[in-house]
Image (cartoon, rainbow, N blue to C red; front, side):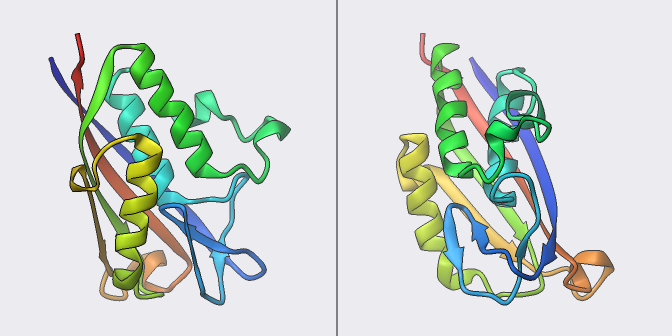
Length: 159
């Protein structure tokens, strides 16, 4: 059985935070504000995976009301989501994700993001597609107030 899930996340850019996307720290004057490390790309992928197996969302599994998740490494949380996926008998077929950001330019960082995420998901890098785009200066993202990411996950039953 093949199943598909969709994920989306967005966080505000602020000073005095590291910018982490796809588990990779990117040198930039701003970082994303959130309870965890606010890695919107990894969060979107986690929600897509959870959606594919109809197992809620990251807010249910890692609530921002729980101090245990304060400053959490999103790649570690992704590993926990992948473990849930396996427990339910599913494996990852493909991830396709897009990051929406005016700045910084992300293309040079995409190979490292793919490597980190593929390792965390225990899949081949060829199963992890990451793209980056701008919104041509429109809206909050265009004004460089935040960064968003969306992802689609395809999984298959291993049984």
